[in-house]
Every structure is written in C-alpha cells, then in structure tokens.
Length: 416
Ligand code: ADP
Ligand code: ASP
Ligand code: MG
Image: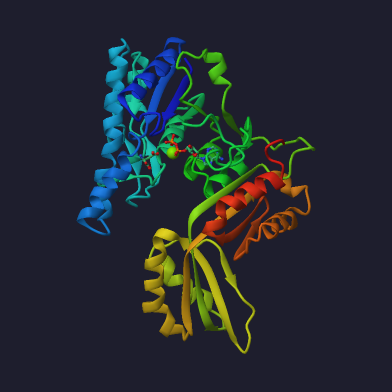
C-alpha cells in the first residue's frame, strides 16, 4: 500500500476549525487507500509566543531550555489533530519526535536529523492507523529535545518521508504552490508547476521561506518527490485533482531550450553589513577577521575585500541581522586592536534581493539587465554576489519591495 506524508503549516493548523479541515483532508486520502503519516507545525503564532515568553525571562535564553519550550507547540498540534480524526471515526495516534524516535545532533535551536526509527510508525500504519508526528523536533543522544530551526517542520516531513520510503511528500501550506516570488509582496507573481531542485535550493537559501532549506536538501539527496500545495481548498476536492496541484520539485534538468533566463526572485529582509576599515593588507587578515566570527557561531554570507591603497584595505561582509550586535561586539573586543584596523562601521538596515534560474547558464546579460533595472529605480547596490544560477545584490532595506517588483516586471516573470 502506498504511503504518503502530509505536512501542514501553522496557518493550516491555526484553529480547531482549521484542524477539522485538515482531519477531513487526511481522512479523504486514507479512505482512498493510502497509508498516511501527518507532520503538523504548531498553531500559527504559537512558536513566536513561546519564544517571546522566554525572552521575558532571559535576553539570551539557554538554548536547551528554549528547545524544551518551543517544541511544545507541535505537541499540542499532534494531539488535537489525532482527536479531530477520532471524532470523525478515524483511528489515529500522535507521537512527539522523541517517541518515534527522530534522532538529532545536540545543536539546540538548529539541530540536524541523524536518523529516524521507522519500526513503531510502520506497526501503527499496518494496523490501519493514521500516524501523526510532531514537526520541528527530535531527541539528541542524551535524551534532550532539540529543534530544527524556524520552519523546521518542512524538514521533519521530508525526512520522515525518506525514512518511511514514502511515495511522495505533500507540503500543505497557505499558498497554492511555489511562486516566481512571494505572492504577498508581488500580486502578479505566477505559480510554478515545477521548479528544479537546484532552483528551489537557491530560493530557500536566499530567503523564500516557503520551504526550509534543509527540507529541500533532504528531498534532493534522496530524490524524494516533494510537492507544495494549498491547505485552503475544499478538503473534499477530488483526490486526483489535488494530487496534481501545486508545485512539484523536479530532479530532472530542464531540457526546454526556450526556458526563461530567470525562474524566480528571492529576498531576505534581515541582513546586516559590517565593514572593517583600514586593515593592513597582508596574508591571514581575512582569517583574523572572520575566524572569531565563526567561533561565535555566526554565519557570514557575502564578503568583499577592496583593493588596497598604501597597504591598507577595507573588508566588508554580511551577517543575519539578529547576529549584528554580537558580531560588532566580537570585532570590537577581539579583532580591531589585534589587527590594527582603523575603525568598524555597520548598517543593520539592509536587505538582499536575488534573481534565480538555471536558464542563466544559457543566457547572457542577466546581470546587466538586473543592474540597469535597479539603476532606473534609483536603487544603489551595496554589494553583489553571484553563482552559476543566481545573482544577489545587497540594498537599503527601504527599497527592497520596490526592487523585487521592478525586477519581477523587467524579467517578465508574470507572463513567462
Ligand atoms: P507554513 O506555516 O505552511 O510552513 P510559511 O509561512 O512557512 O508557511 O511559508 C509559506 C509562505 O511563504 C507563504 O505564505 C508566502 O508568503 C511565503 N513565500 C515566500 N516566497 C514564496 C514563493 N516564492 N512562493 C510561495 N510562497 C512564498
Ligand atoms: N513551529 C515552528 C516555527 O514556527 C516550525 C514550523 O512552523 O515549521 O518555526
Ligand atoms: Mg514554514
């Protein structure tokens, strides 16, 4: 019997009414003869509420305790969904990640899944039960609950699908698929029927939060068919129509010669830029600046080192905005005096906008078109970085939405 994993996000689980709708949709698939494992997120707003409580007690809450706390949101969801299914006559059982067990490393608040034991789940499925497993969490080698980072239920779902050798993983959410850009920012954004794994990986890593990046990695590494689709439709929508709806992540190279140069536009509001000025231009400087940043567990993204004048240079890089204060502290205390830099400057109000597409490999002039569009809007580019299938620019945050809309139009994404 074919097994399908369903994942439902926070909005989809947002009230008991919505949970009833999820139950009816899940029951429809079960009635059609599929074995079903459901991975829900916490009810919308709940994870934020819990993290807010923690901050009221401690500005930098202890990560282990933070995970102990944040993981409870999903525990509420699984139990409520099991009840909603039982209420309509379906046999269902809920488990927290640790009960399955979903084993993770001990990197609290950003743990990685190491293994999933399928025995218990398999037994329930064979007995005809619908199995509901908490998203976002697992248990480390010492029995501590660890969470997978914000948006982590996507990763739980795909990882469970891989471990259970599911036929497909369906990510039900509050939009009806992956769009050319966030449809909440650009109303002309167009839904994609398929997106290549490489493009989805770039979009996710560049800020499109529709899928957590690690879920895309799992899907790609194990070739797990993964589809993003709407949980907002009538739950009684005929199954064959639902099964083909949304956006499928494809693992084939797109062989269409006429493909558009650009598939989508991603953005990330929460960036910060730091410049270390007047650094001596000598071997080892980049390491002396970024080593302490890495030791503080801060992820660096874009990096530029200018040509030196009179043996001195400026070194600029970006970090997530939430790590800005800590980065400035590390540089001021551990780096500035040590390497003899003149000063450190920063800007925590910058955003990154990226155009993404495998079509870039066969099209020229994408960068110049991007830069022309931004210049026509009077938007100054602070930093640029490129890879084979993406170009990213860092700009002042107040122009971010304007930039996304202008680029969406310039690359004709609404009509492609
Ligand atoms: P869930 O709670 O179901 O996990 P998320 O809020 O994490 O939902 O992700 C869905 C949201 O992702 C959408 O509401 C949309 O605003 C946003 N989003 C960002 N980029 C895109 C995109 N390219 N296509 C679709 N949605 C996107
Ligand atoms: N509830 C968690 C969060 O809000 C996980 C998820 O929704 O995927 O980040
Ligand atoms: Mg999400």
